[in-house]
Length: 341
Image (cartoon, rainbow, N blue to C red):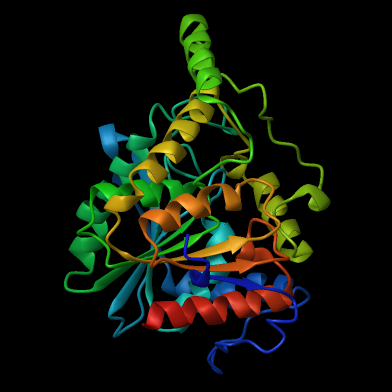
């Protein structure tokens, strides 16, 4: 592993950002966020964001949003994480738009306003992670490339979206020249041996529990639990919790046995075939990630693609873009720098 490609960023390192955010973009502090999300950002969404539906793999109806400023020559396609939805990214999309980038965001099957494969709104199921990959291809073919021909397309993929995005880049290298992976789910914290996965798969098939909530997952709980969340920004945590309480479509909370089994298979496949990646890739990691095993996948990833650049925020939890004021400001400065290259 080429450790020179890994830059570990401590609290001291980010006191003076290496890549400052442009002056015309203000990154809202934790205390400013409530007014901003209900004021300036909400007004911008009303006036500048469009939404519609398209048919993904197998005819599943998927919900998407787009915001493209006049003159934008680069389009960011956001692939979100497990149990996430558009409101989690409204702030990010707002910053990217104001920086001159067009943004497309779709809610993956089983999430938000997109069609589900189980009845419970708070349970996420997928038959195969290749369905997620096929959905992304449908989004690119049917919507993004048709609406933004001759534009540069850049992927931003977070967590589960990082696994989906990596699998996509390995299979369809011609769609994206560049990709930003944020806390990518390339190895889960839960260590399940291959033999155990096979045994669990066999048990689930025999008992037909594929679409039942897995033993290590849970239904939506409206009670606040910020301390055990993936965020360090309490105002953002409270906003997302409120949106979940207000709309049952946003209450995704746990995965089925099928999703858990397929997620393990997907992370293994993504790393196994990482040598097929051709895109320019930057990875943002959280040093205090309780969901993703950062050390567990980095070594293998860089063995196969030693040119990949890695930024690791030593003090961040899983959601770097919802971390402390200092970490968020540094993150957005580096993100915009990477996008501008």
